[in-house]
Length: 375
Image (tube, rainbow, N blue to C red; front, side):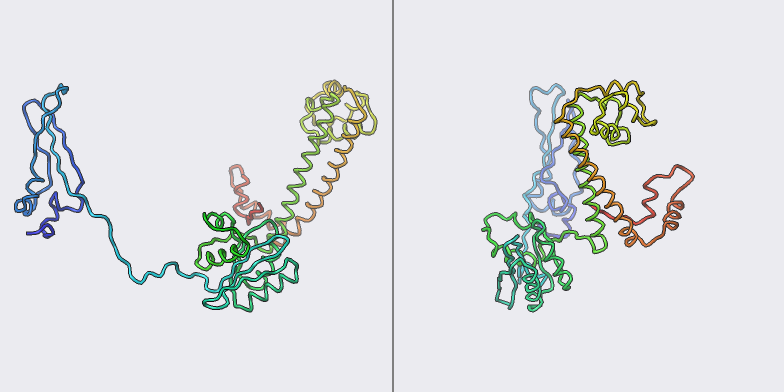
């Protein structure tokens, strides 16, 4: 009988579910409890190595033990062999994009393009950054039957070439530069970069970034500009607040928003030459929580001409940005109408259907309307 005998499947020694080392501890003064072992198979009685493995050997406990004699039964098994397999006809990476190209964006100087013009010939060609050169690059790729290209998102220089190639029917992979540059020991060069992009893209090792559709791009550009204008407007509000603090006009202690009706009215009056706190307090709106007396006390300050000049400049820039934000708001409805071809009544009906007997939330309304990420 051999170790590989079929009858050894449940043997402690031959079982595939065996443990490398199993230890049992039993304590007692005058009794010995042997370990519970699996049912032995016939090989355990015929093979000498199996007989030794299934024997229980009691061992004496250490002198420090205060609970009597301790018996230890250990089953020692031979080490398992590691996984070994051989593969024939190993060809390496599989080609995913056979008609691919790599483009290294050179900013304002030139672009380098790597194309495999023959099964064993790779050509790297340099093109300029003018629009005429970009059209020549497009024709060059179509001449060599390139169906997909990979390029890095370098600044904003990739946008024109991305749009031209996409309009020509060529699939463009906009690659994060961190996916390409995290390879140690590779020399940095424009000509080598386009070849490296071509190699990675050919074997499908690059993932493209999300580029919004043509319907979303105008709306996203308008929204980004509006967000930037709001940030700039907030800076001008802080500058006006700094000028008022420099003259000890503690208007922020009385009103919460300097860009509101009361705040801007007071700023315009100060720029116009008004200095009397009682007159300035008359610009208080009825919705202000502070009293007119509290506002009059906060408007008593020490005026300086150079600070008034800085306050005027900040106020004029704030008004200019406010007008530009209003212009962006006027451009948003046509873009939204083109994106969501629904009338106001239809949208109101969607919102009405989204409501329930309980309080209606904004999440319920957004669930019934199309959602777009403009970030």
